[in-house]
Image (cartoon, rainbow, N blue to C red; front, side):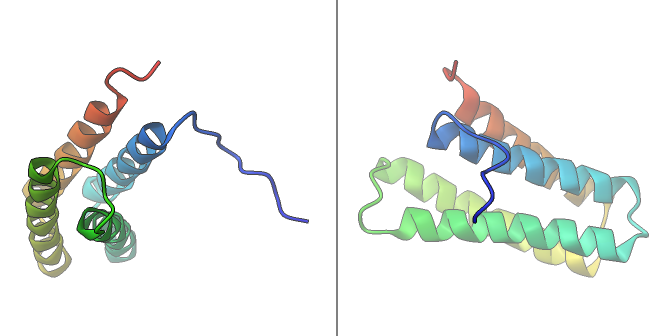
Amino acid sequence: MADKPKVQFSDKREMDAAAFSQAAYVLDQARQDLSDEDLRERALKYNQLLWSIIQADVSERDNALPDELKANLMSLSIFVDRQTSKALAEPTEEIMDSLININLNISEGLMEGVE
């Protein structure tokens, strides 16, 4: 028998916002101790996976988002991918902060208008 989901979301926007918020949280935990290579790598890989999903989603032919928004999300995901690669090689608080802020801004934008 399958377990029931632990968290229920009222819509996809809320679920997406939670994913970006979670990514920001794990990146922040890693930023607080950049010497913990395992934690840092797990946080960065989680973020990379999230943004890979975004890239795949906006590339789908049946994605209903406006073309300009899809292009902006793709550009942002490419930037995030580059920053993540840099952080995996040579982590800095500045890079981690930029990734955290991007995720928080996306999460907050998705939550606008959600009751």
